[in-house]
Length: 192
Image 1 (cartoon, rainbow, N blue to C red):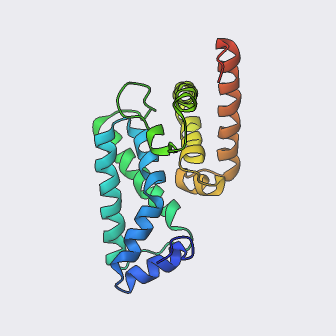
Image 2: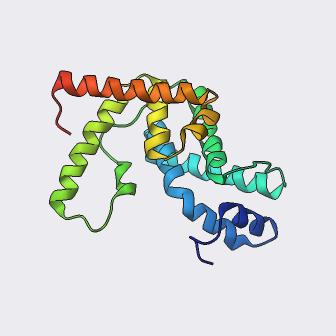
């Protein structure tokens, strides 16, 4: 199977017709975006891995029971499941999701390219760390839009549907997030 040729819809159809490899390809195609988004929300690698596994158990279960009714893309549906599981976790533990800026596992490890030399990697890591700290200081609604847009690469239409707001509200939140980040950069004279 060639990954770039077969659409998500076709892979889902093949899986529902009994082709297990089609689901594996679908998971491989989207795991980085889904895992990264979960990790940014929960701040903990092991918890993110648990929620990531739960997300795919729920996806597989829904598909096996023939309950998949999404007319559209697989990724926004999967992201919605992942986000809901993150929210469920925070409800149980009464915590608010934030982006980690502590030591340990770094979400940007997932996004790194092998061709970087040590200096490029170091500069980019410092820049990512600064951006992450800025995003971490945003109000939760703005932070969520930034995460879903830049880390999960969802469209504003997908973000609006996922977060239960209008496209204009999602766009507005992103605009305010960028304005706030720009203000923080100017106030603290942060060089990205």
